[in-house]
Image (tube, rainbow over all chains, first blue to last red; front, side):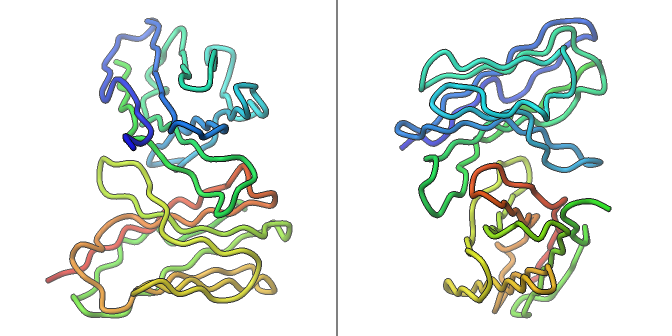
Length: 115
Length: 110
């Protein structure tokens, strides 16, 4: 199993540009989570999907952020326009909804730097 | 007050020591508890999972939950340099959306 695959691993962009982060969850996992990690705030849940449907997006910071899951094997997190305060590591994670031990499998993350 | 609190460290111990890592929380509805280990520039990986109160042991790792005190612990016996990482606690009321602690950075010195 290749695990949760995220791309790109690193992204450096200028303020105001659009950024798209991509995630492929583990095959068979039906829940997908987007987290953001910073030194100041730790790991924050942005949004999660069950069976491709967004369930809770209350963690999405503002309208500049959007996430989609068009099918069970692909999700995107888009930031438009990007700002320096969006600089963080963005993690995607997946699991099987309702099945113990409930823990997530995380991807290796995308390190985003907005200059 | 944050929902989940954790001493950020860093915590430095000699190889072979017993390590105690702890989290406190404020939401009495939490009943699913996990510990993750995160190596530098990697994603967190699940170490231990506990439901409700009690202890769970897996090799050198023991997880304890005390719901009455809203306090969870992770013990690492015979610590190794390879245990050097950041340890994150995570908890949930429904087993789905977990709240993470800020993490404790551990260094095990050879």
